[in-house]
Amino acid sequence: MPADAQTTFPQDEVHHAVSNGIGAPEFNLPLPDRPEIITANILKLLEQAHDPRLRFLLKTLTRHMHQFITETSLTTDEWMKAIEFLTRVGQTCTPIRQETILLSDVFGISALVDAINNPPAAGATESSVLGPFFTEDAADVELGHSIASEGKGEYMFVEGTVKGTDGKPIPNVTIDTWETDDHGFYDTQYTSREAPDCRGRLRTDSEGRYSYRAVVPVPYPIPGDGPVGEMLLNMRRHNMRPAHLHMMFEAPGYAKLVTAFYPAGDEFIQSDAVFGVKKSLVVNLEQVNDPERAKALGFKRAEGFKYLRKDIVMRTEAEARETRTQIDEKTGLPLFDD
Ligand code: BEZ
Ligand code: FE
Image (cartoon, rainbow, N blue to C red; front, side):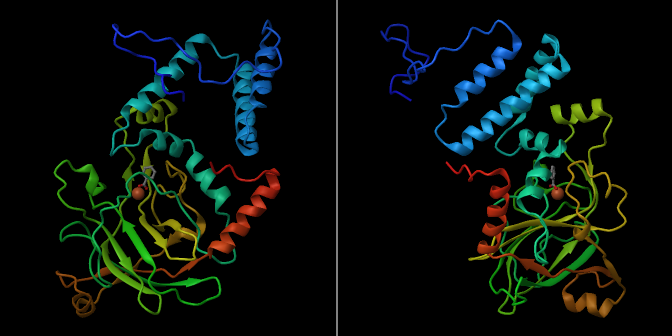
């Protein structure tokens, strides 16, 4: 942007309004006397974008948006309502609340982007939606220790091994894991939050093993007090996610894996409000009624607990790149990575 291309000034300063520095195109556009000419004109203008991927994305998006308006004969009133809705979505965002991502989630857009970019590959663990409740401030948790403070829910012990697609264990994988308490709230949803809870960061040992204590996840509603919540009511859709435990895996040379595991039997598993559940991510929790074992694992109230064993397979960066190359070959265009 040119240095003086701002739009507001103190009244006592003299400025001239300036353009963004790009001149008129070398062609003249026909005046848009008919709806089709408007579509043709914007598509022609978009030809000027330098980056081929950006040009492709913008032209395709524009064609679909114009097609939608033409096909539905959208009324002026409906379009104003849509603008007011989108404005409210933006205005609802705060540093700790992301209503725009929520909108993408409930339309299945987050899940679709994830599914296209992370197709099931060579036995690798599948991905799931990240959601808005991951935080960077989780405490480091030693293997076998608890991510939840006492009283946050029914006991659960989680363990497994992280391997590559070659079957070799991966040591020192950073694992972030987070979940709600048994009231269905993430720690960040409490105004009284002083420290992270029901979340932690672990590292696999030299043989790729991880283990930790947690609480049994419960189904919970995604935020319903904003414009996206209102929209779901208008759609007559519930705003529930089935119970799940989020896990994210990172290791040098491997593609980051963002996933979640969904205990079987949840009433919302086949109508997840954000379309995050894949068959391979549905897990069985085993009930262990062994007070001695519970005590040895460090549970305070030595009674039963639920047990989840989940082995993980990560793709290397090269394997993930190969998948992306195959996707690009389908669209015929390289990634736009500006
Ligand atoms: C979550 O699982 O944390 C989540 C995902 C999408 C929207 C809201 C919550
Ligand atoms: Fe969640």
